[in-house]
Length: 217
Image (cartoon, rainbow, N blue to C red; front, side, top):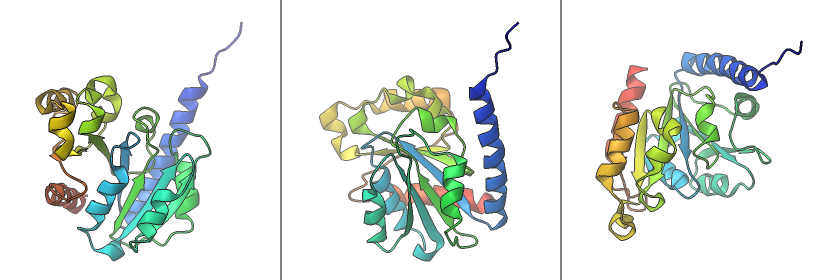
């Protein structure tokens, strides 16, 4: 009789164990870690710039995850942000060993912030914890108001949703009520922050919420 072993389950369990250990080490130093998720072009990096602009710069470090290229990392460094790159070489999500390998060469400020921008993907990254305190989902009006219905897992696991490109909403037929209803049906406690990442409108409220969460951690 052949025994069948679930490799997928074993991979998840090992990653979760390592994530718990990593989170414990970061939390011990008072580092609040935010795992940023969203599809390609949703506005993750632009939103991250707006968030960081509202925090003490010397308290923030960033890990940028991409399948290839360091375009976003270079853009952050040009602003004087402590940014570090992970190229997955094709993997559709970050995992704990990848994060650990970069953290070993970083100097995080005690009591500071660590933002990890995950791969642009609404499926794979949602399934992996990487030592974070929260998952923050970035969605955009240009992607459509049906995203919570098509990709429920990522919205279900989000501590909050930042909804970008609000200036485009009238032109792309975005239905805010439909979008919000989808999010709330999956995750009643997750706030939605409508923003314009180019002008910064709406980010004061989002950052105030992040600060209040960090203060409670």
